[in-house]
Image (cartoon, rainbow, N blue to C red; front, side, top):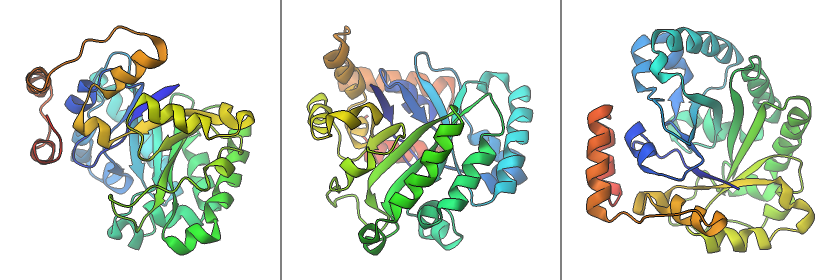
Length: 291
């Protein structure tokens, strides 16, 4: 089972991602395609330097198919200029971000009720063969959309795409709607229906330990467990970057040497010397993590 490190706002710099040993996949912070297409300096934020054993995803926000086309072209140009960043495994379309600004311009969680639009964006990103493509979702923009089960229409649309293109490999579902706070309980009530769709699901929401994953799997009907490709951890990693290695030890019996806080801090500082994060990342990591 894949264990993904969540894209954490102003936290998921290269140094933090590399610090999280044992994560199968990681994501850059969310990047605006408008900026990436129009501003050359926006590519400085793309920090996909090598991380051994970890598949790196670049996470993007857009609502325009033309931006997807321009982005793919620009991406190849930038990778040729900076081959040390040529470690991108996949591109994830964000259809989850609760930012009021993004919602106002029709991006992020505002796209959840537009399955055809999301499908078209995904299809545009699939017009290349080098990168895998995925999408991150929530249950809805608000409580009304959750009650209307609008997410099911989007799942039906994405299920059609995965039948036609094996490069579409990642559907992450965050089990809240966009108006809920970080302290709100996650909503697992619809999960058994979601996993009945033939989609490679990454489950995100309240998962911290191997025991949490075990309970999650046991709650799913046996015939649908094959559709759970992995889980995604965010808050657990901010508290303990070794959580991935601890989970892998339980799954696979792999050796694991626990690092104390001083060792983690020292290693993070050394990684920052290799590729220095932006100041806002350093500030947020100091304030919100236990590094």
